[in-house]
Image (cartoon, rainbow, N blue to C red; front, side, top):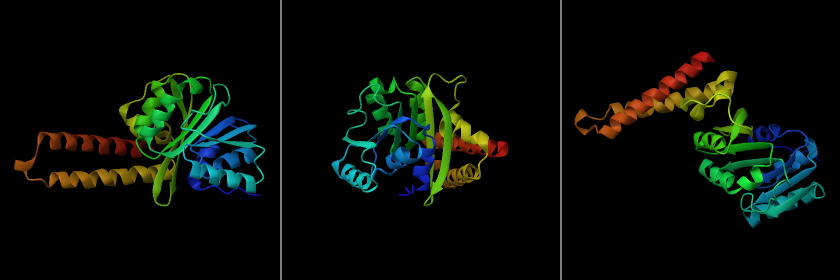
Length: 236
């Protein structure tokens, strides 16, 4: 059976090392776990989810694909059902960045013995990058894709501190992707510039007598962000 992943799921799965012992945290339908077991030859694959409904769907899909002897399913809130040393890699995707940070903090006793994290936050990606550094890991690689009109980032992190500290712009916009010059990333930066410029235009239309100190600071912040993105585009 050929397992077909969405663009976003394939991006995440590609960052998992071959032969990893992996936990798919928040596995949803189990497709990524299935692909990892079959294509990446992962000897241990644990598909977990905090909700019983998605986990039952994953179990059904795994059984139909005849991969139930390769994949174990567990009802788990984050890493709560994963023992230290049981896996060396975790995939956490399809959730907000702040929730992802909570899961990483809650599973620190498990994570400290691991070799790789693949993270795909749906929001607050800058906060996730900062949290990776906060727990003593560094960012090894990033990927970006466009699926159904939305941009998604995937981060691979490894144990150990960054050799060179990140700037604020790198936390928000990615160090690795800004150096790769991919067409998807270029289009992403252009879309963000357009978004910021639209917000700035609205702010500039506010009459001077209604301009608050908070609005002035916000305009300065937007101008700074636009300049940062334009510098990145010029580098690509």
